[in-house]
Image (tube, rainbow, N blue to C red; front, side, top):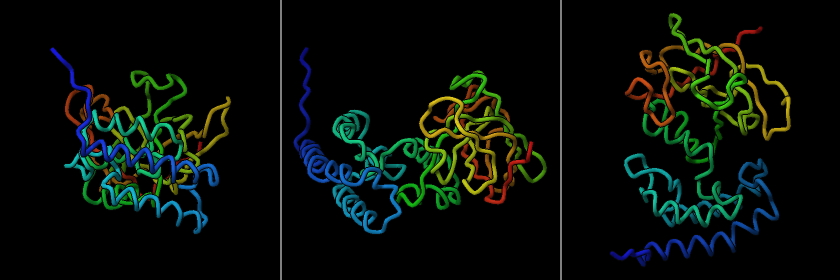
Length: 255
């Protein structure tokens, strides 16, 4: 039995283009303007957009998404070959629209979000008009979902989210937070009043959420029967969970 590790010629051309593009365009930009993608300077934003337009013209934008979710649908093997190149350059994932945690958050919205949620959150995320963060870690159990306590409870026309989330990477600069509860995922806009505390230990981008948020039920859709739901859509009780989008007017009650 023989193994053929060769890459089809058409896709190899894509790989060669990505390698040249990253070496000749992306790397020089990040040396001169680190974190250029998040810059508010119009001139720097114009430089980033020029590179991103080239990526889109090659059909390589948001390459992590399957075709039915609006992406090119390369599959894991081709995605691995592309990421082998992109991973060498810190700015490349943002230039190609594939930076975490936005990638996983966009996959959730694309697969399970309502049309309203997609219009409100997914399209701006894909266009990098907004950025997201993922709130998972809790003080009593780290990132072990079996020890999570943050929970969402229906209260009339609202959902009450109660719990604590620590060390949300990029939480200080994110526009929306995907909060992992024991019974679903909730999207909490940055403008939602909440409590943020400094890190108690050296950690990148520390952020802390606590107490309860009250998003209206009209913008939420979550499984209420599953004891625990996972970002992939599979829950401990089977089935799936839909991201929930709280209202911008939702608030975090004081202690």
